[in-house]
Length: 292
Image 1 (cartoon, rainbow, N blue to C red):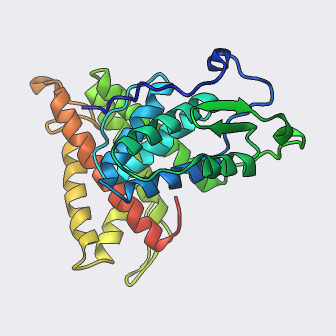
Image 2 (image 1 turned 90 degrees about the horizontal axis):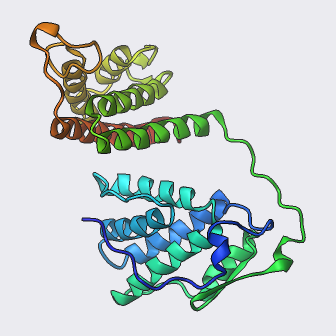
């Protein structure tokens, strides 16, 4: 069950919920990352996964969405950052979610950042807001200099954004009862991610395959007696089953003579399996090639 939000709102002009002062721009990614780090430090004092889920609930609430529990702690980290980015479009509401999460943590006897720490992040990132206990005010002086736009995303960052959007799209499809499409969306993520291993140097030579089946065969051949080899074997079985018209009936159509729809609970099971492989391959990619 999702955690409930704390019924203590941060005080600021109500019109900011709908129309922002011109000087209030979306919170930049650097500041989001710094606030995320503060949340992680709170989590170090307790069940870190539970802490991530609690803050996810707060940020989802101010964005007008519902927070669903992530399938693993690593996905909870990714999902939290995503909802924080969504909330960043309205800085006061973003700060309300952060403030509410801190209050909830304090009620659980956890140490939380004080106003000075929060205001330092706001000030150093050119965000013209100041927190004073339960009040948020505008600081005009912060915006005298022209803000420098962030650098355009690299190709790797663009790829990561596309994969992240597909993961979110898959969850939305599941929630709407469109299981087959949800599984298809995640298979696309898995197949796309695996292409990142092209060019990786292995004892058996450089990975040269262009497609999922080719690349994973080369990875498996070059990684004997490892967890990666075993993970690839299981992943190949799942991929093959979902591709078969008489199996999962997801990639290559279905056998009309034995047509049955993919049940929602089965789709959720397949999606969770695929997400686990995506997470594992991401970890392996970081070890061999850098960030994707």
